[in-house]
Length: 158
Figure (tube, helix red, strand yellow):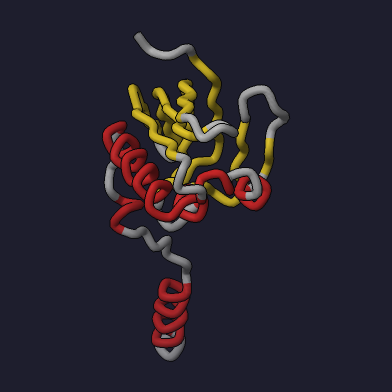
């Protein structure tokens, strides 16, 4: 029995070392709050303004869903990206302001208002107003990505 004890101890230590230990990044272990998502909304908008559709899409998860106003839903980051080329036109500018947010575990949401500035066929400025809701999900690497987004038109604010 004495001769088996070192083998059992070594086998036990090897088993403990071999067990997968979840690796949590600082972002994943940090407590996210509604303000976290509001801050991300600001970074999201800045990325879209600076890098157009690529910056915008960098905040979307791979399996995201877009629910565009008056159109069928669009599934998947690749398909959504095909509709965002208008953000690459420097005459167009999309801005938004989060009004509210909440978070529970690995899911959260934001909602607010947006303005889309463009030019019509005659080159005259046009502004579209609306409201939006975005559902955010914490990813495996601890980052937060939009997994569902929808917006719809509103009258001009007074």
